[in-house]
Image (cartoon, rainbow, N blue to C red):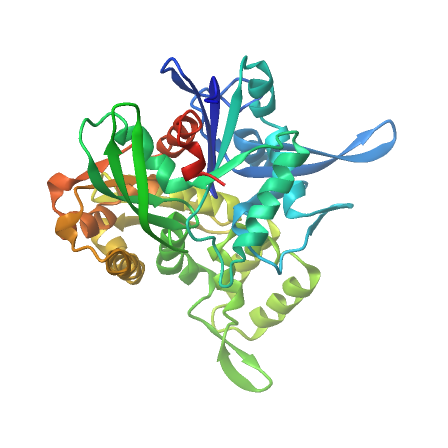
Length: 433
């Protein structure tokens, strides 16, 4: 039986979007902020935990989304900020994280996140038969991703939320479904979905029938390079030199570079916050004493001690977004004792991300080989996700398939909208698990 109402849940590394669709053709975003202050439907996939005193006892309170970002920015020393936690879903090494006095598994974090949104209330208020379709990447993030573990964690979290019959579908399928349902022709499509942690690619044949759209997946591929990777390239080339990345120190009588772990930790927020320990800070203080650039090492210590990582990541992400539509962008970051102000150049940025672009291009080439299809047999390329707006990323596809063949969807809402529409499709079982 076809559902009356469907909810598409695009749980992303950076942002989460939920769309609601009904069989009368109405599709709308579900504003996830409980306060109702943000109506765009784009809810940052972050949590901020803080200890609070209630009746003489310490409890853990938390916020999600924009409220979490505001809380972490205002009280950096008192808040545990969790960002990009989706990156851990397929990691068998990630068992739990300790937040103040409580231990959180991945499912605990996911349940906490969605409980603090309007999702459950919106689903409960909907009348009629309902479907909930949750998106998943083609390839999960990490060096040794365990797909079965990731899917089990997703289902466990949604079971605990009271949504026991959730369906799971590939995110890039959702990304294109809303666009191609409006076409009146059958087409072979390459879908490119660029998220925060992964970039996913899928070749599918969309066939129009008198009753519905049929789609036959042909081949898929994914890579753990996406928006977060591009942010880190800016950090590597602009910020880290102010934090002593090019300096040396004396270790056991030998002059050596400062240990790289302090700089690779800037690739992910959770890695940077893990350095805020007495052991790491003592080691950095020792490094500073023998460093060729002690002031720069002190800048690094300040960033870690003062929890300035969030401000760094926000400034870098904002500047990167501007480079998608401008040749230059100003980057300004307050490190405490020093303020970094530089003008970024798009051509330099493209040089920095060239190794990442090459891997994306290779993944697309491998996908075509897997499907046994030359580029000429692809009728359309559908691009979605924030990084699809980067001109150098788009150029990979226009050079390979032609400018006229490349189309774009809403960089934030396409996936959730398509997932919601999938929930109403008569052949939903072919698309979901």
